[in-house]
Length: 132
Length: 507
Image 1 (tube, rainbow over the protein chains, first blue to last red):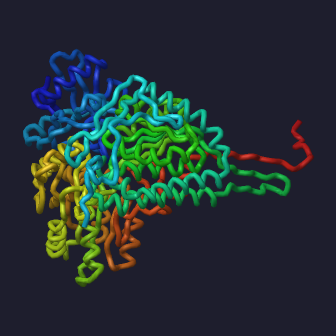
Image 2 (spheres, chains in turn orange, blue):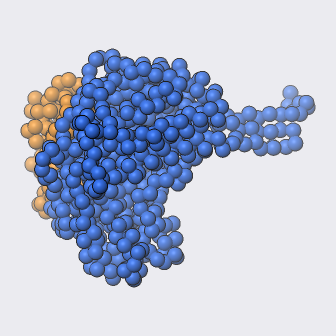
Image 3 (cartoon, each protein chain N blue to C red):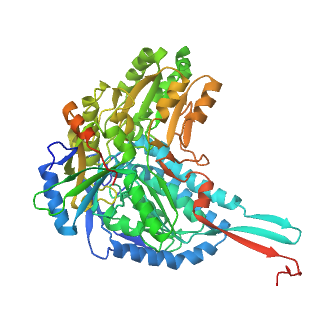
């Protein structure tokens, strides 16, 4: 795994991902924009949400206890405004959130953000971010 | 000033039952799997009822009922359907106060808004579509003197509707009224954050609508919303929500080759030109209210004016007045008619807003007022309250680009009209915008140059029926609130008729 990354998961989020992947299978995230349940990460069965040239893969979360890394996607247009921030997927008590898998458990994935340092940004921007 | 008793307490104007089933085929129907979920009020954070946790099985039952009812309902005359909508409007109007309190309890919004906006607008919306369908006409084209093209409106059949939680009854109405007027049967899934208030409406209108024409299945998005949105048994899906779910619904629709209408939010600019401050008169006072509209409904509005663009030359003076107006906002018990800002709709909504306030600070935006959770005492201590917050920063920052869906406005300056247009359009969205000016020419120029479905000019947050509402860019597809929405719920049948006895001569 690379030393510098754009995404990470908290311990609580990792626990929840282990539970969800045990119940459902391989997972993915797509960061949502817009209203209501938007501006939050949506967790789906891998492949449920079709990504394409208009999306950017931010990274894949290697979660101990889960075989397949969990890819985290975002629309490329949204990424233009987010590229300077590091995202940590957390989980809070909550209710609902589109068709995201965790909602029936009374919890909701949430993004916590921090600014990437200049050094991190330099390394990340050097890598070519493949659209798919 | 009135403080309403909490639903269920002595003296309350409305009471929720302890449990609600799904409403299918005109009957309260237990969920097939027998599961329910607790529904808390955002006012206190405590559960007040439990609601059916529907699944794909319940969606199928509802679709069975809807398909049973759709042919008959689709054949009723527009006059008969309009009469049903008018009766629905009347019964909501007669029960406006209890429904307003029920809505406040389910959603957390101040009762002054539900009394003055949510419920009266819902009443008018049903009346508008009753009128619109009576006045709707097909067309005929005389192609030549013996050949005529007739165009008839036909209902789609059975449609699926997924409702957001920010205006639970009004948003359900925006979708139900045109669908029913156009002759469709509906399977509707409320938001799991606000599943209950719409059921109070259903209790009142159950006998007015033929069985199976309106079906309500509650549950979680992944368990009930997804089976509805992906079902090949619906002729159309209407959704209000966010972009990722919107894309997913389009994917399902592409698999079934079905139309969708989507309303997916925005990051609406509210533009204040220097001439507004030319006099400290009634209009200037109105513009300050227009600025403060970011806090309406706790900012939980797809068109929340969450970016304020102030012209350089008046920036300091205007912002001083705007700050004073924002600090005067009364936050408190949503059941108190004096309260202007109530509770956010859910705990995760509260957490998300706080996370945005955090990243705003990290990006270097300055908090001019607010900037944190509002800790209210007593019964409200467990509720979800955020202080009205003003950030000052730059349009490239994430708090200027993402929908926070809280009482948070991000303010920046612009030099001239061209600069205002550039900043206003530098967003992925295009749902709403506001323009404030005394200059007719500037108002028209900006109104046409801004890429948004609605540009409020010298007003904001008005949602009358008969003014089309919908988005440009990533804000969605379709226009609600207007008779053109009938088209989104209808097929066009063309009869091409020859009145000539003569053959064409090809064979």
